[in-house]
Image (tube, rainbow, N blue to C red):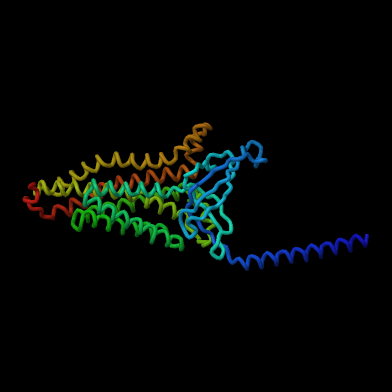
Length: 384
């Protein structure tokens, strides 16, 4: 028995020494290679060879391998030929069915300026998105003329405000609701001034839009708090728990901030449409009083709000069609569906945004009636 104990002891010592030696060798090799950096770049598929795998990942999975030869088309390794391997599991959401000439993304590990490992990442879709964005801008400029150019400018400002101010400050832990309101107000003012220039029309539209956005946020906060929405209605929100910055997010605040930003576009549309229509009425009839101007603004707003409310509801419904089909396929009871955090969140998002848009109409009409009746528009400006 004592011999066995000594043998086990010597075996443990031997394994420990060999393991330590191996780790030291690996550490020296890694130190020689330098730290590994991750890079993503585009490549074009040259050849594809499909072979059946010997073993499947699990019973029921159809396993296949793609042996790819690709040419790097972007980045510091442009022109380099790589051989990659990609496994198919039979799942349509993850399998990439490639043909020669397809553009793909390659994820690589780089050390000391050379490729260590390279793997197939995904289809390269960015070029098609650039073409679509270019067509969108071209349509705005060609059809909209100077107004279209201004729309492109304001769109760029909005994107910079969100990507350069709103998101970075949220990531640092600042209040998402306060940030959403402030950024929304800045976006509204800048957009309206660029598109409509300074004047009472712009001021009336700004008052109505900011008021409508605040109303949407307040309604979302009250209903969301009462319904005990968690803010974890999506997988992306849950993923924020594990980001490297370890920010202590107010997830319910993020939800309400998203509702405010999501409603902003529709509310801006309504506010400027009502204010512009009221200004045209005032120009056509300079003698009209505040009551008549208010009535005209409300009539225009009523015509707009019906279609705009449908726009918001249909936008959220369209995004949830796969989920709704799942509920229908499994005959999920309506009581259970409506009480799910995800569904309740989307309902609050759609209806709170719609209510903010609806209340923007009387706010803009009232502001326009008070401001535009004091404005003076010469009759000559109406002559064509």
